[in-house]
Image (tube, rainbow, N blue to C red; front, side):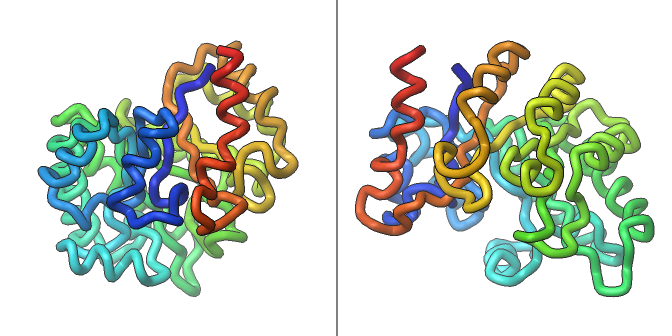
Length: 277
């Protein structure tokens, strides 16, 4: 059975952020993801993780800003990364430096580097050299401390004009960057919306070794994996068949929203798989 990590920025939202770690631990999650660790100092977050016996397996580099206040301001805006934005290279480098500091302190092996939204009037071909150069420089810094950088295709319904939308484009980018520690974060929810044909995409890309992390959610509503059109039991069996040994991040919004116990009550899909294991 795949290894599942709870994304605490999306799950357990009925609770304050600081209480979600304990709730996830009670539900058997020993690994977690979060979008932004920067509201804590590294030592504070490390203590929380240790208290609950959890490993942080993924977080995002800052979407913008060069200090904690600026980072939180960027998250509150529509900004979704600076990697592809000409003229923002210094801000991008500052964000990577902060993210790597957190990754080292928290022993987190991978960071998601959001590409960013295409500026009005610019096309992908115009900004791709900036994106590739930024990733190449960041990859060299990350390699020194043993950290992987992930790039994620995101559908344009959720984030209009996001730079990276397709799996083939993401794999083209990592070939162009040419760094072994830059890999693809393959979110099956986004992939279903943009491309579909998920089983064949997994068969094509997992054997390359260039997929560093998977994420799941039901489609089209981004709820639990057993809600919607994707046949996740089939795909989980395929992951076992293909020998995928990485983490599968549960990045979804519980169907019951912020009702008390909403996340735990929606984990029937996971309980079924644990019973079979």
